[in-house]
Image 1: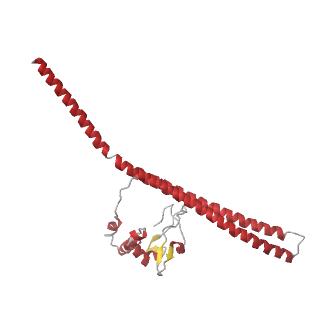
Image 2: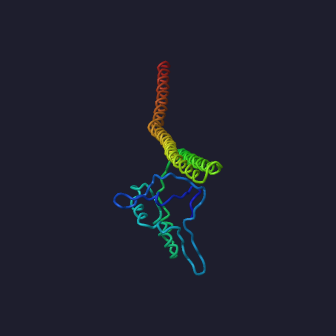
Image 3: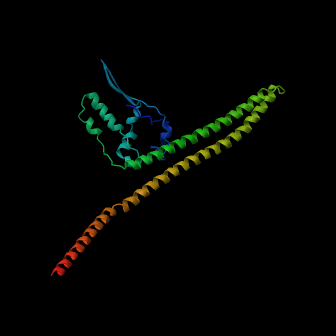
Length: 254
């Protein structure tokens, strides 16, 4: 069992955060950064004396997985860890009678065109966040490289002895470290501003699309009824005019 190319990885301590009561809560607000490669999550091993399913991490069947399965609405995350575990046991036991049944799930009919537009906005937001992170890291690396360059220039000066060089380097490092810290804060703020702007733009586009859908849902349904009424009215008017004309002809003939 593998992920798709949009899969990625993150630290456990970023994904799970402690709560004030001592329990662990899932952080669902982490930025998604696809790594464009498939990750193997589980594998079936078959050999003359081996029949096993190897899973990458035993935490997939932890207490938190059961809690997420019991109350998916509260966490906003739907997982199939328990279903997969039960299917794995049945497959190893040679009983596949419930496997196909567990595969079935509720299918929600969605608006494919709207989903495609939302997917486009989401992918653009991910690219913009990745670009902001890349630019921030490049700026930090540049500042760090500049500090190293200045230290190397002091070390190459022939007019200073070792002690003077050491003092200058320490003073330079202290000064540049303060500048680096200030620069780091500014870069982090700029990165967060770009990410927030990207998310706000995506949310604005999503609201616009949903507003257009609601407006269409309100305005479009009466149109067929109106058109049908108009057609019936026109036909009735034609029949009345035809009847009146026929009645006049009968009167004229008499």
